Image (cartoon, rainbow, N blue to C red; front, top):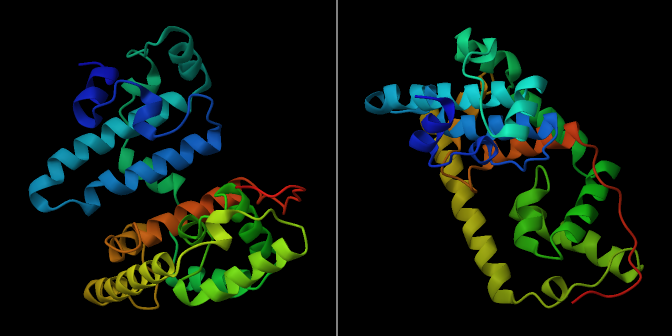
Length: 257
């Protein structure tokens, strides 16, 4: 069975880009992030024993998809003709895909994240990211709070104040979704994030995650059920941030609805 058929069987998608969840024009960094994001869901280390074999097969297929699209010649062939060269060394060399994955994605520790948070919060970099998120999501605070690094519900008053000050100064546009957000929606977001934070901490304790070195899959697993996979999103956003520099605050002259 060829790679495209395997993708349909395993992921329900016969298009390699769809498997990674990226656009056809994706850059090398976008491809890598897509592979990273999907691999965190299907990596065998995260599967129950009964599902280990199936997870391993899906992970191998996913890794082959990334290998094809990250190879300039193989990607060009696929883009132009819609086919995969099943005889190419990219697919026939049969590498250890788990080792390949670990070479691409280095280990990260709890201390790494804590150190980053201390440096990032209240920085100029954070300020510009907040403004960019506000414009990107048209003032939707749910999406802003999910997008900005290192924040939780306790940071929301500070985030809102930053945005409101930029609106008042004319640096940012005034979106109704922000200025007229209902108290009901605000309270619902607070309840949701409080609940998810509690679940994350319980999961962390169950995993026995302390302050020492733990590899990426343990960090991700420890918060799998919190804030839409909070740590997964956090690490993915960190990777995205440093692959693509944050956008600077953009001035808009007219109000948006």
